[in-house]
Length: 512
Ligand code: TYD
Ligand code: MG
Image (cartoon, rainbow, N blue to C red; front, side, top):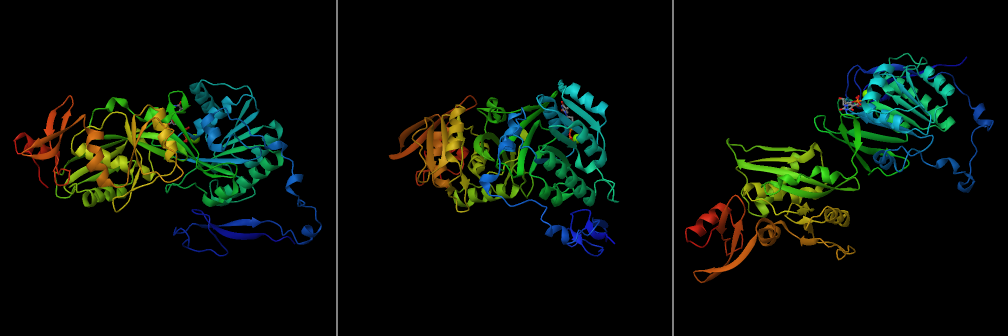
């Protein structure tokens, strides 16, 4: 008699155990193991021996006629998918509730007019989908909608409709009768995804699944799902901001470093093909504490605006706060400024913000962060049309960054005059750029020698006071008109205000 084989699965992380356990060994969740059927019948070794399965082939024997990708009519989505949807592939789009997953796929379904599409929603009724479609102001005569949660019905309808693209929103709502557990459980998700995968591969139909993410931020019904599908895309962004980023986490048919950027508006998601122009607000020019970074997100150059506010701490322990940037890294950069470049920021509150609500992991924005901090600290605006790229090391060195040429090219394209970068390694040709490229090795050198004339100030005058040559820097902008001198022992100054006062009072020099 056929034997039913069961096993116990953690409903939180998908871990498997032959016996019931109270606490999951891998995720630590209590009482999360549920018995599920793994195999209904033993297949027996005989069926393997008959040789009815697939035969091994040489690569040149494999036809490649069906590998032409489907253009999704959405350049950002195409880019993240690696050039379009591959027939027969399974794409999982994950993201927090309300981020715009349903909007994205509905837009895709309504835009792709040349293909027959079946859009299955287990979350929304057909009426709700219609309201959303009206909001998007789009229509497609070739797109069928189905509100259904049973896998068997979905597959039966798919066999009838014969779609060229199947969309399922969301996989957590789909359930199959062959398993006892409730919809959304690990067993159900695995069974349903496997059922859909079988359908996709047999009929060479691409499938887009939508997946929820758990409170920890990983896809619900976790690794099991990610292993089965070909491509995992994560849709992310801050709810209160309009930018949404679509990122490839796994892609069997393309690079995982690609990135798609969208803007959520009143009538759906708009592709943002030139994000830098949106992320930089030129109206802030002339205000202190703002600096522009030439960053790379994925493999895409992106100019972003970093704002800092440095003020005297009202309480004993100064506050350090950052939005969109790692707080520990901010603390590290402040320590480097203090120890390696001699800026005393220990008693100052420092607030940092990356404009536009985006999060950046690129370490090359370090140089911009410290420039913005110093600009705010001294209340000196940074010169117009300057941007930065450079990672800061613990000993105060400015380290080289990846894709330097791409960053410079993006800055040049957007009309910047100068870019501050680390010393370029061999094999990087900087001659071809028209933009002024200023290269540095160390943080202290950067601020001491170059930042003063090149960055903050409009004019540089060499003067003599009391027989001693020193650099007098005349700084004029619409707010103030100051003269001051740096310390002539080292060329740097502790505080510009102190220097101003010492110079204006006729002292002619400043001290450390
Ligand atoms: P939705 O696509 O339903 O998110 P998910 O499927 O990821 O849960 O989320 C849409 C959110 O976006 C919702 O809060 C309303 C908003 N929205 C717009 O701002 N403009 C629009 O045109 C649409 C359709 C939605
Ligand atoms: Mg939804």
